Image (tube, rainbow, N blue to C red; front, side):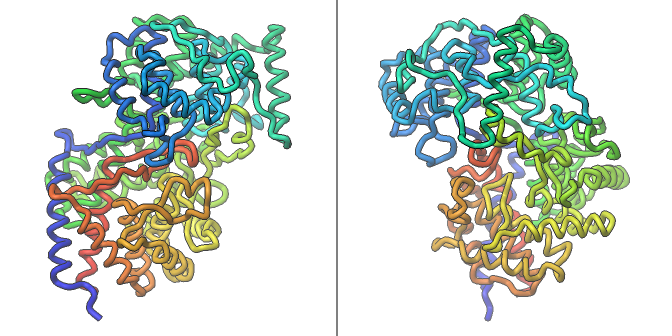
Length: 638
């Protein structure tokens, strides 16, 4: 039966051309692509707090933040963690705080609605630790309700049961400066000075500034916190000043020349707060450079001013290159050549924090951002290698040497269970997620199916190989990670559709015969969760409730992931889910806009499952293009 008709093939060709033209028009002169990385409003709210604390708010257009925050408030009065979630308490408290810092009266109708939303959900006392910490900085919460972080943690050796390198890179770069802040417990006076007494459901005079008991073994941490606080009260904290000095030195050593710390706003924000707690001056070059780095994450329009949590030029560039070339653009097209040469210039040849646990690896990876020497990651590096393998550059020898260096680095980063993590190897002490401070459950960086799949896809698509025993360990790891329904968890993208697509793309290339049944089960699961409109979608709530696996309104990016996974599965098993694929392609064709783009409101990127989500504004462009390109390549087979 002929499934692909000439009309569909023609429409696909036209859709590809329109999106290619759009993406080519979006390339920066230096060669890279980069689109907005959107999160919830807390990032912007916390930057308002930062500038109010430093007294640098008048040097930025923060009045535009008010317009932004008002635009993001929903009818129920709250602000969202991700699009359409019904509002989230901690996010709403921080937005409310920022508006008061910007001079908005609590009698303003928007504030009245927000206060009702917040109080009905338990108020400040029910918020996350980091929200309470930000409020404590301006006297709106008591420091005794914040978990203690003894500075001597900085002095624990690498071979100790626990040290700062057992935390994930993002937790480490955010926590080290907080060792200083939480030790000093500063309360800063802002202009205007504010209170948030009205946000205590039980009344501020009855608030209990304490860590909640869980009624299980984790209450041991509460006991330890009491001991830490007693030691602080009696001034008996051992090696206190030595720990503070070590933390300060660590912060200064890890500031990039551009002013960034860790490439993420939480690390940058906390580092600047630590320097403020140490009485640095706003005119100090280190502080000035750090504040300017935060400015570089801003997006300013005529009416609004927002801050991105991170920026993604390396990631975006590599994926756009792959999508353009696999959809028919010549590998030596000037646009992708410029991009390839730009990527080569961003390879990191310095040792970073990853080398603490990885004593054998040599530098050669890529990071997510423009500059992030200390924290390159496996996922970005694998995607960059695949992009470079597809482009034809003037200096192919230089490219091949860069790829070889990257491949060796990735091989050295394999974790003991057989998979790969994002930033570190064997960063897997799960008990850290149980400490009161770690209430976002993101204190570690264990190996995951999606990152492991990316590495194996890179090896299979590029005809690159690591030694057989290690390859077999990785394949076995992915087999073990398959869920009973046939899908795989997605740590860095929402969620099981993302994870399943990635693993199918990997196994179909690296071990199609050995994993045939696994591939077929994964493909069947994808077919089973296709929506009636032909697309696929999955809600962020699937992280909280696994019963929602693969369920959600259709989006362009998630539809593309499903198509890519099904095409890969069909190529491996010769059993194409033709009807499902064609319905998905028709969904993409029907939802493409006249300028060649797609639009989705939903967040399909993951920062911390259950707690922090992202919308990559280019996901809705390059993943559909990649899917259409691979579909077009099937025309000769069908």
